[in-house]
Length: 151
Length: 151
Length: 151
Length: 151
Image (tube, rainbow over all chains, first blue to last red; front, side, top):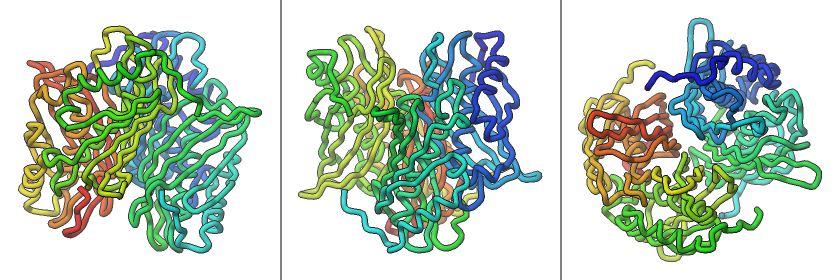
């Protein structure tokens, strides 16, 4: 993999501002960690409000956060004034969302002018144990200018 | 498609009880509608707490609800004491989550002893207009007995 | 679903010419059937050269043909001089490729300027029986001009 | 990732025999390379018979070979007398199939009693250049006994 070059010197500020503007991330208690060109990490504590019928983190939250990490990984490589939106994503659910905390990474595997291919991982963390619980493969579309309304 | 036969006479009560036990569905304000063998409908009003950076419904919510509808569609065909879990899902995001209400359907396209293949749709509803915003293709795994802890 | 309008009056000739130019389709013995705006049907006889270890049609052939049907469904809606390429596809393998003949359909579920979302189905046909063996969800990208080299 | 332990001392012979039994692999000119527990490599030369309309390797071949590599990666971890079949796969097509040779890897990312999650990569090789052209995420199902007819 070639080193990924940001095209916006303010890429990190851009990513953090866009993250802060997602009400859902606040609602879920997600925090943004490292932001490097082409790679973003998110994390959240377990939250009983967002569980499925067995009391584990809902798989939909896992996918939402992994997809969001992938979207911000793509955004970190955009030129100023360009945004991204998810075209599609596929997630494999390897293990239940059982943990004290959850960590999500998104990574660009191929940037392009129109499309950005990404991959992500979700881990459950309990004490010293870290377990891979899901993988994601997501395609992002580049949106130029102010009309990036699709999100 | 052959007519799908429930193997649990209480399939509808089972699905509604399992839905009620998902804290996340309550949190999102999702309601369960029709439950027929192999097909389930969910709906939710727009909720500004679960939006992305442009103020539309977060794509992760769309996927979570469509996947959940697919899971309950599969559950409606299970024998008593069997549960289901999502193995993987792929979602295509056709359009932004702009609407007053959202509707999600999940449908079994091939039931099996071990795996159940499903498909779902998500629509945004605004006044008289209904717009398809996402499709989902999800595989569910049958979990026998009480150890269906994976969810 | 709104009726889909072709933007090229010669859409059918265009699709058939592009199909004829795919060496692999000839090699597999695939024939093109109906071509209507946004929907294309392909079919092929069982061929022992393209089998897996149990003597059934290789799943890769099923996916290749279903994806190709989806690509031509998208191409049928393109303006003159525009082509399409597959961005990604996801296929669920419902049943083995056991049959005398196979039929594949591809259908556009949302056309767009840059991306075209499609879905496809694969069936095995034996005597009077027709069995759904796979589904596909594929995203196509529109390629303008002569540089549609990506295929 | 934990080291993956084979449960069949003859895993390599098993994988090579199953590969040799896939007529389609012979037809495509695919050769099997390294076989280690949980990871398999395949390769093939460019072949004009299996091209799309621009003369590049057909994307369906890329997917078929990547999926096959994933299936054999899963098979390498099976106990004696167990087989695997592809439940579903999703492939992202990063780049056209332009190259003199192609290499495919399949890798198990989570083995299980019933399901095995895998990931794969496809590369085009031209002279000294190696380019990633596709990624795959595939779920395999374990088939016990002699009835592994689904393939």
